[in-house]
Length: 337
Image 1 (cartoon, one colour):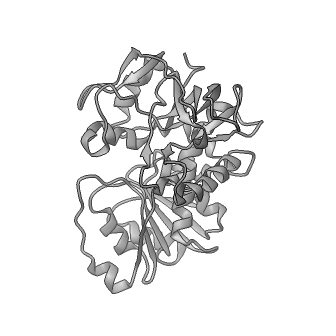
Image 2 (cartoon, one colour; image 1 turned 90 degrees about the vertical axis):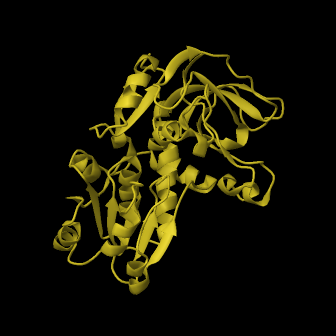
C-alpha cells in the first residue's frame, strides 16, 4: 500500500510502498477514506523523541474509512461498515477503558497510521458514521471531539464572554462549541486575519488581532474582560498572556501544545484567583457527540476544510503547513488520487 513515511528531522515525508497491515483478533482493517493533517503531526516531526516517533513510522490520527476485514474476536463490526477512529488505544479492560476513557488508561498509546491507504485499529476505537455523512468528513470527528472536551473542561456557562487565542482548527472548533453551549460573546484572536471569515462561519461573534492591544479591543467589543480565555496556540508566554487578559476569578484553559517548557509569572493568576485548567484528548461519549454534530446545523465544522489532496501532494503540503498559511484543515483523501 502507499504511505507517507517519516524518515527524520528536517526531511520531508516520503511516499513509499509498505506492507498492508493484517488485523489482530481484536482489530479491523480499515480502507482509509480521509485523514486530516494535524498541527501535532508537525510538532512530532520536529521533536520525535518527545513523542516516540521513529524513522519509518506513518503519521496521521484523524481518520475515517470503510472496514475491509475483521479479526476473529470482533463481533460488533463487519466489512462494509463506515467508521471514524478515536486514536487513543487503551488496554480495553481497565476502569478507564470500561468508562469509555481510554485516554487515561495506564497503557494508552496514541496511534497513527492514517497517512496511508489502509490501517489496523482496535474495534473498540471505532464508531459508526451517520448514514448521511460522507466518509471523508468523518475525519473531522477527532479534532471536533478534542474541542468539545476543551469546552466541557472550561465549565463554560450560558452568557459567558469567551476569548480564544489561535484561529487554527482547534481554536475555531472551540468557537463552534462555545457558541453551541450558549456563550454570549465568542471572540477569536490571531496574529493575522486569514481565518476571520471562517471563524464567523463556525460561530464566533467577532475576531481580533492578537497583540498588546488585545485586552482593550476585547473590552470594546464585549464591554468587559473575558470570563474564559482558551489558549489554543502553544507558544511560550501565552499562558502568562492569557492570565493577564482574563477577568478576576475567571478561567484560563491551556490547550495548545507547548513543547520544551514555558516561562510565566504566576502572580497575575494568584492575584486574580484564576482557575487554570488544562485539556487534552476526549472520552468516547464526546467522540460520539462530535460525530452527531457533523450533521445539519446552523454552524458546520466542515467549514474547516480548505483542501483535499492525494499522496502526491502530501510532502509539499506538509512542509508548507509549517509556515503561516491561509490553509486550515487539509485532508488526505482517497478520492484526490
